[in-house]
Image (cartoon, rainbow, N blue to C red; front, top):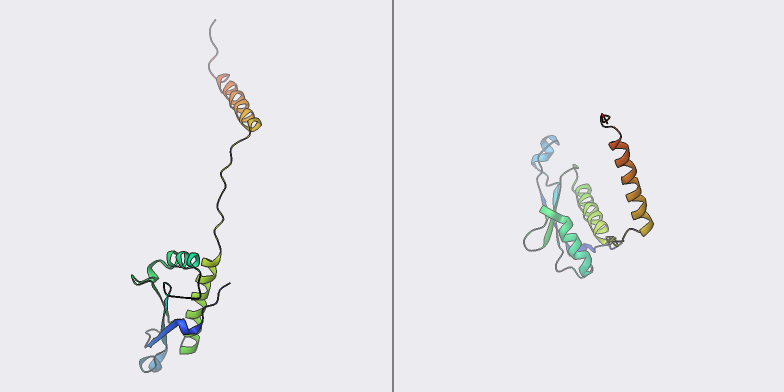
Length: 133
């Protein structure tokens, strides 16, 4: 599990909409956090590639992940929320995908399959109308 140092994160604060009464018009509580994935020395190249793919629309053309947090009414909680969300993405990108090793069916399994097919075919052929011979 890789943690990202705060020196690599850039925060911008702005006024958020939504509930909050008069306070929402005068206090910059919403947080926009930017993290430059491409130039981050704390992540391995494979993790960077998976993180960029995982970021989707949150990734800019410059390779910067932008996370906006407006869920809470205080700047501190929104800042912590943005950092938690980025950490969750990094943790998910840190897990290496397991690749399926293709295998071939055994001779016995092929024979069982063919035997089942012939049995099923004989059952179906016995369902037809009786011949008038």
